[in-house]
Amino acid sequence: MSPLYAGAARVKLDPPAGLAMLGYGNRIGRNAGIHDDLAAQALVLNDGANKVAIAGVDVLAIGIRIADDIRERVAASTEIPADSILVCATHTHSAPAFNIFATPRADAKPAEGRDLEWERALPEKIASAIIQANENLEPATLRTAASQFTLGINRRLMRPHRQIQLAANRSGRADAEVSTLGAYRADGTPITFLMNYPCHGVVLCEDNLLYSRDWPGFAMDEIETAATPAGGPRPISIFIQGATGNIDPRSRGNFEVAEEHGRAMGRGAFDALEHSPSITDARIASRRIALNLKLKDLTAELAIARACADQTQTSLDNHRGGDGYQLKRLRDHHAQSRAALAALEALEEQNRRDRRVDMTRRELATAMTVVTVGNLAIVGIPGELFVELGLAIKATPNFARIVVAGYCNDLIGYIPTRAAYPEGGYEVDTARIAAGSGETIVDTALSALTLMRA
Image 1 (cartoon, rainbow, N blue to C red):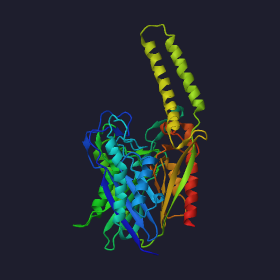
Image 2 (spheres, rainbow, N blue to C red; image 1 turned 135 degrees about the horizontal axis):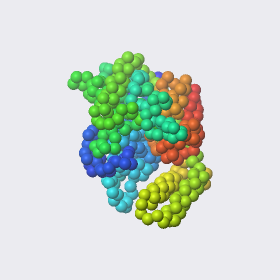
Image 3 (cartoon, one colour; image 1 turned 60 degrees about the vertical axis):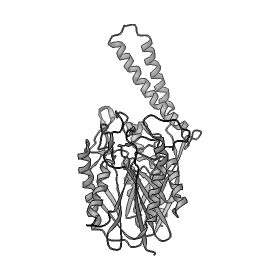
Image 4 (cartoon, rainbow, N blue to C red; image 1 turned 90 degrees about the horizontal axis):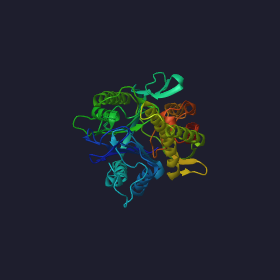
């Protein structure tokens, strides 16, 4: 087989100060500065006949239209097919607000808390990181490794009366595996590292108003520092999220906590790679697979929500007891009913406005991308996959190492397990796709991995 080649690059995103920030609905205030630079980090691998590119971008998410724009720009400037490009958001909740689903048109009106010119320039910046990585290709050997890291914890805690709360569930499923890929020059110096682990980027809470990569940023810094020889070139590290839909950090709070855990992960990943054998040749392949997922049927829930809102409105209209506590109670009841109805109506409106959705068939069209590098497989998932589903993909015996890459080339929202739907909770309530969609994604991924291994 032909020798392997690897190239990497990093391009800063440079969002302006003072923008609104994504990730927390109850965050108060706008960005107050930069703690650590947000960037697009890219890796390109070439086996002499096939190329793949993987980018980790320090934003909350990237929708399919922007991802397709990036992929098309790269394909037009390189020999990398668009279907062989994975654009993955690191899902930091300390990043600027922007329209993740579409680049603003030239005639778009200014939006409060956003910078439309920065948003228009974003796809080119991300594409340029991949293009530069392609220009930096050089002969390489690879190493893959797994290490253990215990930051992630299941966040769906069952309360009395079977209510799901977003809180640490220490008996729930989680995935403690850090998967790491390293690319090295002939002299042993590292070119790049690719790290994968499932845990939301929310060590920093809603009181943080500084741009930051959260704990993954410290992990990237640590592995780069540990691997940089005295006076030698600093490698570029790339972080891609795993199946993190129902996984939060077990420790949260501030930059000190984020740094402690991030650096521990980075050091563990580096140490694991140091003891891994080199791979000098590996065939590269990729497949982009269309997904048509059923939407949730909200008919019954909407009917109940409308009836509740009508009843609480009637009770409020019929109140004759003055301005005391009973009136306040009735107003609170009606506000709760209206909020529940508005949330369901917002989901339906989102479906109606989404170009990916066929409302007649009630299906959402998206895609997954599967990349294989020898005995390593990377499965790009277009949303927030529950960890149980990620573990099911990783359990296939067809490859020695499976990486599940969430927030990849699209964002369709939460992808819960079938069993989670009757339980409800935040992820299920806000999910747009029907029960069983997650299992469909798993089956599709496993079928693709079987075919690509044959």
